[in-house]
Structure formats: structure tokens, C-alpha cells
Length: 265
Image (cartoon, rainbow, N blue to C red):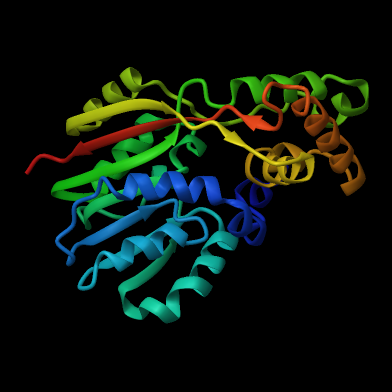
């Protein structure tokens, strides 16, 4: 897997099928209290759907949308640049290495932090980007996220037809529990910390929708190890066939980690 492949997404597909992430993110956005003139960071903006919702709450404010994926930023720009013009800016950067120092009144993020392997480095980076008194409100995958689904993927990956391609490939997510996350936030300097875990089980109507979502949202980096589209399609067909036998069928066992904190004044 090349460095560029590992950070890129099929942003068009993600934009079309990421209704679960958008729904979760809207609930997180409901927890944010705004004056309307803040300068905020959207950390891991994706295709910008929630960034637009955030900007709608900031008639006199500004948002910097950050993502590691150029494809995601390009799609977000297509959605948001004309609509919000000078109130939105886009930056390509890893969240653990943000190029900001005391720049934001608040940081909002959903469905992004679990893609960062080192959460100690992540929270230090976010803390540095906040102004004194600034807040963090976020949600990401948490402890237990997709355990059942990933166990079935691992079982299929051991098959002789896929083992040579997958090899020793490992998923790089960090699915942390609330207690560990609170300790990491505190170590970074945050105060008024609140962390919690909630289930977000997601079902799909059939094998086609299940396989498309799983391949584009969860397993795209694993699938990059396969040599051709036929092998990838065959693998996903087996993943979907196994999911059809669960009760209920075509269900993903998502768990979301909620986290909040504030930088001291």
C-alpha cells in the first residue's frame, strides 16, 4: 500500500452513502452551543456535509475544515466554497500534526479520531490549536466498535484465496474506551472532561447496500491489498454472505465514543 493510497478515499461514494455518519454527527452538533461569531475547526471534515451544518450556525463566524484526504477536501470545496465563500477555508493535514497554535474558539469532529493511531499525540495537537477557554466536542469509533463484523472479515481473510494478498495487514484504528480517553485528554491539558460510549447499530436492506458501505467506508484500505477489482468483489461478496446469516442480517455493530473537554482560560 502506498502512502497516498493509505490516506485517500472514494469521496464521491462516501458522500453518497454516509447517511449513518451524518445522522450521528447531527446529534453531536446539537451538543454545541454557539454565539454565531466563533472561529472553529472541523477536524476531519470529510465531504463537508456536517461542515455546512456547522457554518449555518455561524452567520458571523468562520470554519477551517481539515482533512488528510485531498479527495475529501475537493468534494467538500465543491459543496461549500460558493455557498460560504470567505467564511470557509480548507487545509490538508493530519489531525495529530495540526499547523495551528491558539487559533480556534472550538473544535468539532465526528467519525475521524479513530483513524489516528496515537491519541496522546492527537489530543496534544488539538489542545495546542485551541485558544485559552476553547472547547472540544467530538465523537468517533469507541471500544467494541465493529468487533463482530471485523471478526468475520478476519475469518474470511484467512482463506487461501485471500491470505496471500492480505498477508499480515493490520487495521490501524484506535477504538478507545471512555476511561482511557479521559486520562489522555487530561494528560494533554484539557479540563471539564466528559466521555461516554453509546451503541449505534446500523442495518442495511440487502447485500448490495451492505457490501458497498462496508467496502467504501470501513474496508477500503484493506481492499487496496488485493490485485484487481474481481478479487475485491469476490471478497466482499463473501463478507456480505456471512452478514446475511446474522440475526438480524446485514447489521454493523457500531459503538460511538463521545468526548468533550475545555482548555483552561
